[in-house]
Length: 346
Image (tube, rainbow, N blue to C red; front, side, top):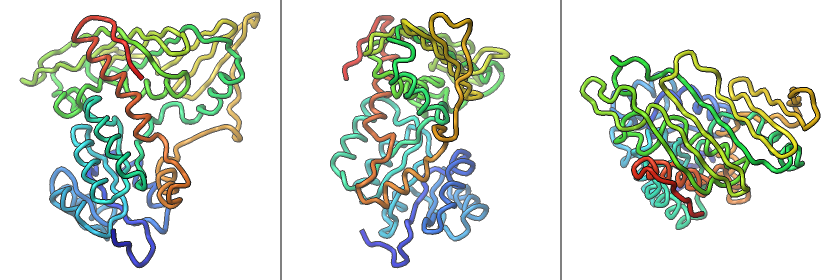
């Protein structure tokens, strides 16, 4: 692959929606030696509009395959919905590009495994998935509490992630409710499974129940659940109850509770407030999130630094971690279909 003579990292964007515009592009623009040179979106007109408004020196392109054929693009930033992730990722790797891919990783486990296999065929190219923003600020502190055995042995995990986004029966189906676009991904399942497995280890089995409040939206038949409850087991022996909903009026903020044999920890994902306590304490207390341990959004920096390091820095989360949460997404879908407990092989 020919490199540009100005030594800039040249990026092509495929899928230039709201999250790319509001979250990723500002991070990329912080680097003077990073340049967005081409953009392909759902239509040529929308790609042209994006370029005119945000990256006037970039070239709008009709087809993503033509963007991948540009010889001096170093990396591809995939911001499309999940139905395109596997095809674009594999094609980009085969074209010699580094790949950043939006979450969720793929439509189903089979596609995720195809992406992982392709990344292993091209180990010199950086591959990274977008991590969930939830829990980033307190990530290191939660890991510290667990590593120091503050809670003892975790045995019970409760997660609630509720919204009222799908309560309106007259609204059209959101793209996340369309299985042909979003695949087997349900509500915030994959997002929080990624967070939980980062903190507590692998989920090894699930039993899932779902409900669809409004099965027909403007003539479209919805088959992705509006409400999902998952019983799960973890490799560390803990049992979990994970609840997700898009049909709860006036919901509380997303919240995690971890109970151990000697203590308890809670995490409020809306405020990043962490509370904890041990047996004998009168109540849970706030755990200070000091600047020294506070995390944050470093997604664009992590990818760019991994590419520049030429293999010395490993971008995280990588495709291995993506396949880990896609195994759970697939198992939940299988459990819903078969109405039975589904074991998850690592």
